[in-house]
Amino acid sequence: MQQNNTHLIVGRFGGVYGIKGWLRISSFTRPSDNIFSYSPWLLELNGSWKEISLEEFQKRGERFFVKILGIDSPEDARQYINCDVAITSEQLPSLKKGEYYWRDLINLKVINQDGILLGEVSEIIETGANDVFVIIDNDNSEQKILIPSVMGIYINKIDLIEQAIYVNWAIGD
Image (cartoon, rainbow, N blue to C red; front, side, top):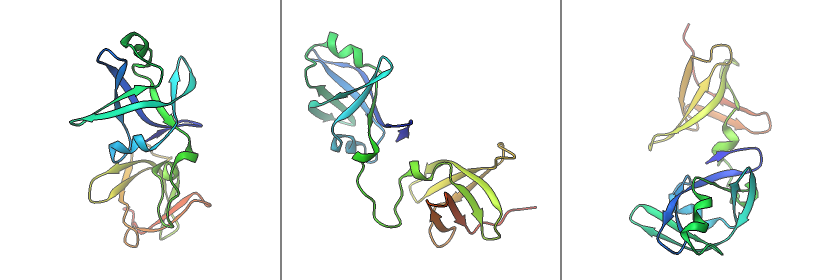
């Protein structure tokens, strides 16, 4: 999920499908069908956000298709091609203790066991086994440190109040 100042981007409309105003949609959620658990959707259209409701959605193979309420022709649906689909952060489910949304971890400072600031989390890579934090040193933005997100081994503590992740990670000379 991508984020701007007030909205979380969860998908993007592709091309028109059929003659009744259906659209293809690409989901950025995990799993991908989670996009349909959020309502209402917000669309960025001509530089402003518009709330929409779905009339229906379908999955065909690995692709998703949606019918927006009130859009009944390919001509009407075309205005939504390449529009971002967003939700507000209030629509996200509450997390259990020790769980975090990636958006809350991006830009946190990373400090190792010796109190050395390693940099900030610039992105998170999903690897299947565990997520990996990509740390960028503010003094040397070309140097990246990749730290597996494994609590108790590499990650000692995540503190959202202090905006810091404390890690067990030695740095070379």
